[in-house]
Length: 348
View 1 (cartoon, helix red, strand yellow):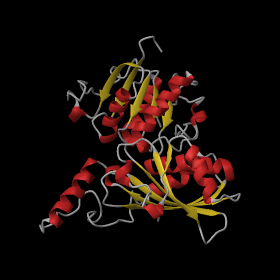
View 2 (cartoon, one colour; view 1 turned 135 degrees about the vertical axis):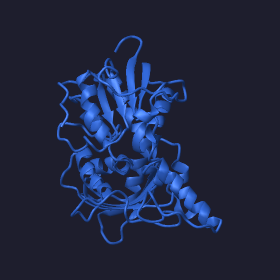
View 3 (cartoon, one colour; view 1 turned 120 degrees about the vertical axis):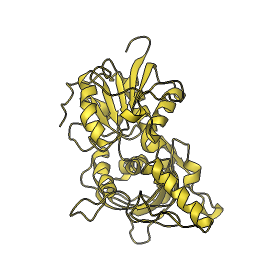
């Protein structure tokens, strides 16, 4: 890094997560001498908050960057992340494109930062639901091991896109004003005043959604334990922002709820809110705008002597996406490993 700081690209800068990435780079005072915003052709030339002008992705425009934060979808990441890396930048990608590649580290800053060492120019940000869960599971896995997880998610519509937020609000307005509800465009069914056991997409021949598969596979990779058995049901709920999860954790060694609370209270990035008799527990509306993962309703599973139930909530746009990407950039900076340790991989 030069004395003046890093040259940083944000790809997908006009989207929900990209906008937050730009804001967090400023808020957290990341040492950047220049930040350049990239987005799709239709946004090129647009002036963003802070005075940045959106650029187009070209071979010439991507030269000379130290870091590139991506939140532009899998196809864009598949094409342009290797090009940025080939030009010398380290890419932190928020799409699912690179997460399960064997030579691409999948990293949560509080959970497995050591996986960043030896990166080959591309680093993957996990799925938002996986992200918040493993922050809470890491101390439990370290202390007692994890045999099995049974997960039910309650995922906010902002995890889909800003159009889904608009659809929820429009539907709710129509229902409350006794107007006709327009046919759904973002989901298979009406989301307002409803719950859809269908977060993500069903691949042909698969009875699990891709969101559920991400929870299964990404959790094992991040915790570096392929033996963990995972059952997941992902549900889309009429909440604007903030994912909630009911997680049943079966440990290898005995662990009491009291021990779990103590471990979680000391864990980085975790806030324990667990006094249900006083109606104190994590809620999506309280997590919005926060970077921590909130955990509560920690209790013994009466059906298994080595299992605990807990409730985990986080802002899916912040810790679930943008915040972790910026935190990874901070770790790379602190450890002096922004530059790739090995030649960047080529595009698939």
